Image 1 (cartoon, rainbow, N blue to C red):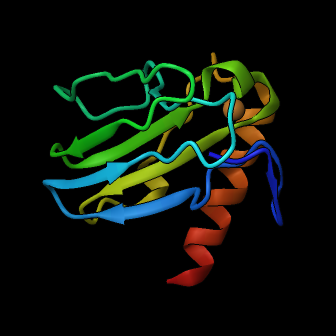
Image 2: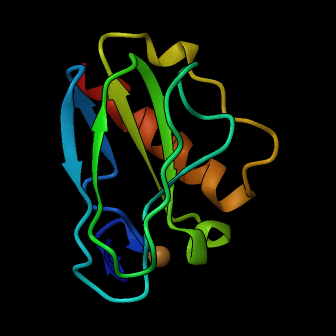
Amino acid sequence: MLNRNHTGPMPFEADYLKLKSGDKVQFLASNIGHNAASIVGMMPEGASPFKGKVNEEILVEFTKKGFYGIQCVPHYGMGMVMLVQVGDASLDELVIPDAVPDAAKKRFQKIIERAKAKK
Ligand SMILES: [Cu+2]
């Protein structure tokens, strides 16, 4: 969780992770004032929502296969989000809910384009 990097202000770095079921991610408070929390409607069915406190370095285990949208709550409206993929689901199956703020939608689109270009 950073204030800025080459992708712009308020990023997660990395902003896309492809994991195997059971992998764990530690969210580091490299800059202060951020947190990591799941996004309602952007998780596989049956996955447990999570929400770290601001500046908290939570460890999250990802078990259910599919896509997880993750936000920094204070900067969600500025587009501070990242995408976690567990397993081999197609990025074309990912649906971004209407309730996601525009700046966050834009960042998700960029993340998806970059992830597709890598394949
Ligand atoms: Cu933030």
